[in-house]
Image 1 (tube, rainbow, N blue to C red):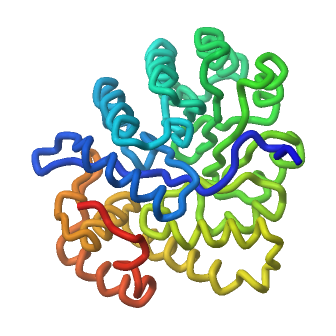
Image 2 (spheres, rainbow, N blue to C red):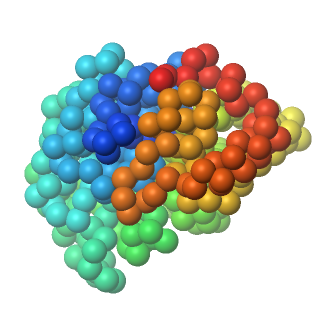
Length: 314
């Protein structure tokens, strides 16, 4: 039986590694992506919010993607973010991804100008899709209005699906609004709807959603992969309650600090590689005192956090 969704599963919104001088460490970024696949992720969403992509140059973004592909990760398992405010640069990054063998890209809306009209958003996406037409990569839209200020509306999705059948295949919904996600599933059969929050993976999959693309998966990928497998096999909410509570507790832990900095600090502790805690300004690493508080909290919430993956790349 054919899967009604074009893509599904647990995808990690993976970190970008930096060295002590703040330069992108492509080798360590690629090693981390490979490790996440080994830990159970179906794919890797490189160069998104968690990957600090909006703080990287176009050249750095290209270098990261090339390094991950060259390291042996199947490019069809990658969903890199290629959407920026500029349509020409979005086209450049999207074409580059396709040239690397990538099948699906994640597109932020243009987010600098306040309250763009739906017609303007459609014109932006149409320009990109026209320039990257078949056999170009498939597109997943990125709905994160609390950050971008630009919602991806049902009407916009409807127009794009009608104009570009087979090109727009999914939405990453990072709004945190489960009812909005369920509404997308109901309104657009065949559209792969992914939750951007770990604790919504179970409820969304049970509503027909495709899976999740999350930040905390950098640390708890095996838990999310196990949950997705159990739900796909028909496990009831009662059967997965304990696992879902562990996942929620882990996510909530990292919400106590700037999330990306806290997650990278935790990964630095787990790997013993201090440079994993490095973030790009305007983010800053969490303070040493807070790092110790985080470590103590991990002992309670993620007691096996140093053994969650088969190996943690240095």
